[in-house]
Length: 472
Ligand code: NAD
Image (cartoon, rainbow, N blue to C red; front, side, top):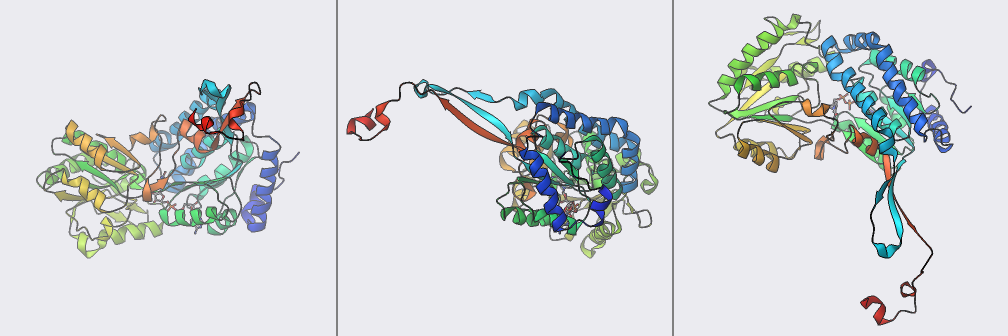
């Protein structure tokens, strides 16, 4: 047996460079022995992930509540159900995805050609805290479906979910090839020193740069799932009530704004903005009641550092007088109410860093068409860009002129749940993509294989050459 006999507790206690090196060596040996390649092994791991979800639902929900006060509804809708869908699709399509794709080639080649999906080897997945179940195990689905050995490093900022993942993965998946290493910067640094066949990282662009620099030392390819400021353009001709509801659910109904594709700021026209604010007030009161800080349906801020970061954005002199709704906060509960700002200056802090929380500034333009230049003028391509309109021409203009990881017209965040669409960033919001078949592809090498017969070995390829040969 090649399985590693180190308990999860021991890994937690001292996971340094030496331990990381020995772990990777053993996983590599198991990969090289072919353990992860078979259809049955891959299927076994995918079924294992499904069993984790089926058998431990209440523990998972409790962990998410403990780490983020995540409402039970959100735990199901945004994490458990999405992950189940992803796992079930991989189970259903695994055979098809693994089958080499035959491609037609010129008859003159007298042979056949195919594209063979090949596992990459031993891959590292570094995850984040805001959807700590989904963003940890969803990439694992792709990695094991593609036949790789995996090390998953969940975020230390969601510690209860992290240790639950360590326990359940070692219980339900093949420990000789799939491992969870818990920890923070020292443990991740030790892992990043090793040679991997792919690194899949979800988190901030700042650490994304560290990850990419470490990967470059070994020429390891990376997928970087980063963030950015996701704009929402609202055309005054859009249905105002539906627009406000769909922005509200994408912002405050997904981890209270702590989501990479949460609407970060709104751009609309000067005339329309006050009406939109009034509608938000109405909608927010319907959703979270009169005292949102006491609502059981509003996640808390992950920790006091992030709470302080957000209140600094709210309290900056340039914007504190611009609050038109909300503003309440409670540091003891780490809760901040949905807060809307109108006409914040472009050089304010809130307009110059990713908010990643319940604050929503609205900036105004004379004509809605001016929004697109404004988005592009930041020079940073967002992970998602949203437009609310009933004008087909405006929609075409939006798609043609705004570059972003993904786009959604007349809704927010929902594109993340469509398995048929690739999910990922562009420019500063990341590189590479996943979900559905794109996850399988992200962890596979598409190996072209050309086979020829040895009949009719034509002379014209070989010297001595004559002029007539290339004229053919
Ligand atoms: P983060 O970069 O601080 O942490 C992410 C991971 O990196 C954690 O596992 C952490 O342990 C590790 N890490 C932290 N510091 C490190 C260091 N110095 N060296 C090595 N590893 C280190 O990010 P975060 O604050 O947890 O997440 C917020 C960011 O993530 C936001 O920008 C958000 O938009 C983005 N995000 C993106 C997606 C996506 O799918 N594109 C999803 C969620 C969050």
